[in-house]
Structures are given as C-alpha cells and as structure tokens.
Image (tube, rainbow, N blue to C red; front, side, top):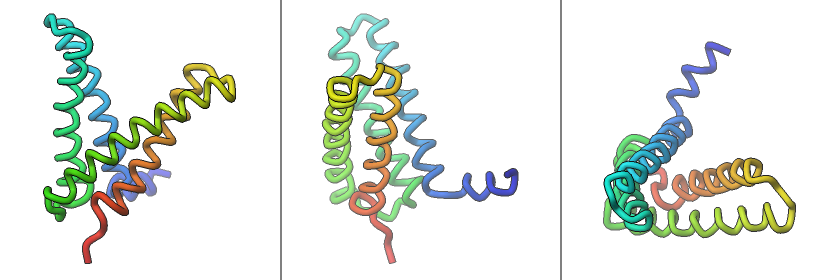
Length: 132
C-alpha cells in the first residue's frame, strides 16, 4: 500500500482532485468572508465563485495539465464545461431526491462524484487534451 501512494501522488488524477478540493475550500472561505464583511449572499457568492474559477482554471491548466494549452481555446472550454457541470449537478441532485428518495448526504455524495467524473473526463479529452 505505501508503495502505491507515491505513484498515485504523481498522477494527473491526484493533481486534478487536489485542485478541485482546494477550489472547493477556497470557494467556501471566500463566500463566508465576503458575506461576513457585509456583501449580500448573492453578490458575495458570485464574487467568490468568479475568483475561485480563475484560480482553479489557472491551477488545472498550469499544474494538472502541464500548461501546454492556449488560453484562447482552453478558457472558453473550461467555462463551458463548468457551466455544464453546474447544470448537470443540479439535475443529478434533483433526480436523486425526487426520483430515488436519497437523503441530502447521499445526494451530495452522488452529485459530487458524478460531476467530478464528468469534469475530469471532459477536461482531459476536450479542455486540456494531451499534446503530442
């Protein structure tokens, strides 16, 4: 087991998950901070999301996928992917609760896994495709 960990830590999947978790934490902290400073919940959350989007994009492009992709094509694709993943996560969450009667915890876990999987696959194949 200890021999497998260093191999996993060097994978693109590990870097992708690290950036994703970091982005989620950044979004949480920024939204809390901005609302605590007096921003409305809507404005605070939107500003926090925009900042987090830029940080996550930069980290995914530069660290996870090696920085070989032109911003002119990668940025619009990343934006489209994230908007699509947001809508997909809403649909998965809605169906999990209304059709399958899942609890909020189970729904959140399913939605997180589903959206992360779609995001990773499309990031790898479309947003930041392998360069030969």
